[in-house]
Amino acid sequence: MNCLDCATEFRLQVAAVAVCTGCGAAVCGDHAKVREHTLTQKVLGGMALMTVPVSPPARRVRCLSCDAAHRNGNAEHREATW
Image (cartoon, rainbow, N blue to C red; front, side, top):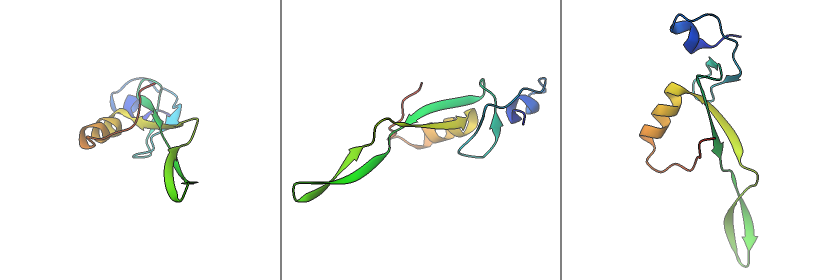
């Protein structure tokens, strides 16, 4: 599978290293944005349920377009760039 963005930019065929979780496009290392994604779980803490982060954080891969759209449309994000 080859990178969709490289193909649309008329580059040589570049092998994809991931699939965007937003749109499903195949992306190469240059067109992929990998971010940490904090998952949480509910646990009983005393007499109430508490939300706690799961460790280690998961990874989320997006193409540059989906990453920009997500970052611009989501003022409150909890992801860190790797």
